[in-house]
Length: 214
Image 1 (tube, rainbow, N blue to C red):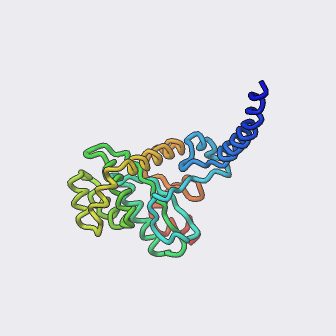
Image 2 (image 1 turned 180 degrees about the vertical axis):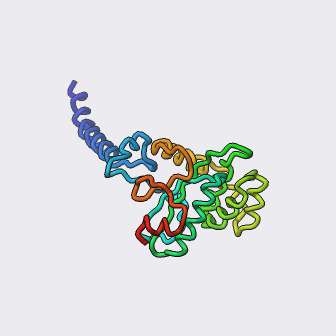
Image 3 (image 1 turned 90 degrees about the horizontal axis):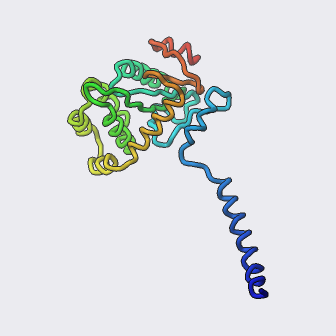
């Protein structure tokens, strides 16, 4: 009995210390991506639409005005709207930036999901701008054959692209964006947010300038 008591006296403090350390680690833990349940805060003043390191950025990263655009390469409205936004960024390069979030909603004549996977991997090489222009130009035919032709027309390292496409990273990023789109109740693309509020997209440069106070 004495020996058992001695063992408890030795190990109890160690167990207590280990449990305390584990508790501290648990309360310090922050997931890489927010749980979809956290999006229940949408609509509250303190909610911020998450921006991930993998999200392409068009414009000056330090620009004070941020536009979040949910778009699909096979969407004609997205093609028109993003062209407009790009012109706006070029006209006001120090004023605004665009965070682009790809939502592959189109299924016919080709699923746009492959285009979004290519976009993810191309963005890893800093070539998103080159890719998206050609992708939107061919928005009515985003087959893998066309995507490979687009890649051949851009300065992209093919071996690195191939490795990325074979990984789970593109699918994971698309899934996270889709979950965010569902949480935001996005019904169609393009859907644009400014200051975490969905807005009716202007159809002209001057309309955007009025909306943004430029």
